[in-house]
Length: 479
Image 1: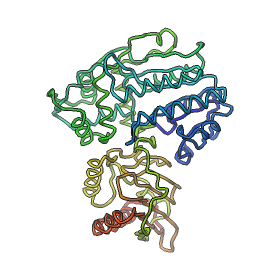
Image 2 (image 1 turned 60 degrees about the vertical axis):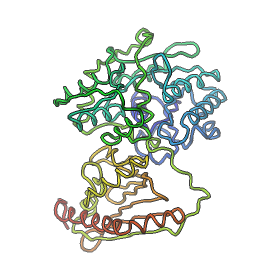
Image 3 (image 1 turned 135 degrees about the horizontal axis):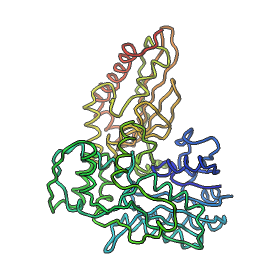
Image 4 (image 1 turned 45 degrees about the vertical axis):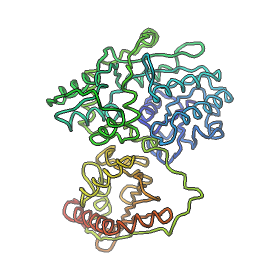
């Protein structure tokens, strides 16, 4: 049995199908198992657990031969370094107690000199995992290039949206990008390599490039011309806000990324090429492959799929909420259930919200300024929906084809919020029920809701009308 932590994330979400294809028995550890429902083969077990909960780890590691540790807390607004330390220590001890043969960890390459908190944490996690005596293989990678990866989405957004880029000093830092397919290959080969004890392997593509050269390579393949004007004075905070304005990366994650970009991330030890049969793609081919997948809108996973991409969600136990506020509206359309649900299933992302998209964009901008996720994440796929998917500043909690879409808010609000769409048969076709629920946190939550009530009323009313018009005008199935 193989345990995969971080299966909802970008790398883990691609590793699990690759393991399944090889015939492995896989178990996934997830804080919210419902978000992985239907994502993997029926042979794969999904169990509830958290690396910060030792008891859940001991249960999940029962009968496990090898385990992948793909967890990090960069999206957390708390001390992510301390959370990473506690999680790694809990996991290492539980793995030793359960007799796990090998732990495989994906960390980060780091150069000489003072390290950013993010990179220092990645190295520390590797040391902690190996400290309890379980043989640990640590793969250290630079930028991972692939459709949907955080690095690639950041790069793509910068180049696509900024014809003229004012670039800070970090664009001259050297890196050694590696394609996501090559990362997965290394991780899988790590199961069977004969090696006593723990080891660190540095992995990367065959060529070193600067971040500026990587941007130019993307621009060349995308067929766009871009001008870069270097400046020496964009500090990490300003750079993170700059990233938040034009990329899917919101300011909290952006700050942690930018502070890491000052460190060179290049391979100095080539042992991985000698020990593993993986021959990584050149950066040009890695970008080309990612572009092909992006063009098909078929990114298998995205960095924002991970629940941690929105930060650790608040624990509301003991908090005092006011009366729950419900805004429920209905519309009857002439389409059957499939036709009525079609525009609902496509909501958000590039298609928008069927009414006043500029207001949604404004709300996303306010959320970014408040340290939230904003609207930059979009959708994983233009049509396909699955529980756990990010959808702009919402996350899909439940999905039933042609019947139900239930979203939980991940934007900054003084309380909890949900948005739900239901479709059911009606005499004249189908009935769409749209329900917005807000659970205000004390007086501040009530002031927030009623202070914005005219906008809420306008948006919810207009959104349902827009969905109904789309059904009656474009749905191919009519009653």
